[in-house]
Image (tube, rainbow, N blue to C red):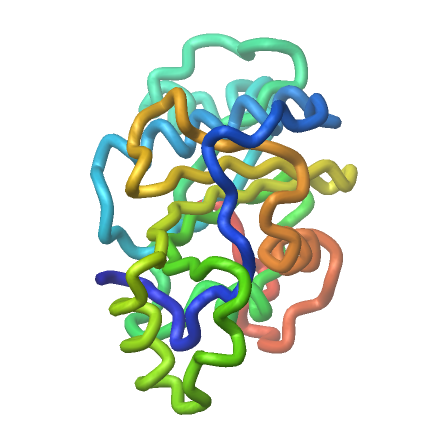
Length: 209
């Protein structure tokens, strides 16, 4: 399995039968997150983490016409829409959560989004998980009720957030769970990249690749 955490995620996993989530604060962000989820899903499972810059489509067309043309964007799109721009892959062996603590986006980036795959365990298993990271990962992999989930989380400078989750056991578009606060820890890290100063000054100008 690629890009699984050193420790499994110890929280209840969402079921596809959850009731509808509240309407998104920012429909453009929701559209971008769902676009990313559908795009990544085409490549199947066992993928590394991915990071995207979200840029205003109209601004991209006006300021970077050659890039927009290369991405087959021939117009400004819907008012306020975002274009996801995938960033370079993470350094080998570096977890996404660690990388996000060293990133700050330039003002030209309106938001960002991340994609990760995780093993998720059902509630009530915390006390059974070994303290040793290697043993904990083995425990998660062998747990009969484990779930593999792909999480796509996106945020904007205005404070909006949106998530889309797909379980490997329910791998179809109709079963994708979406909402505004499904992955709070990851959302907090993404928000920080848009507002905080990174720990490593060499990455302070990280931006669209």
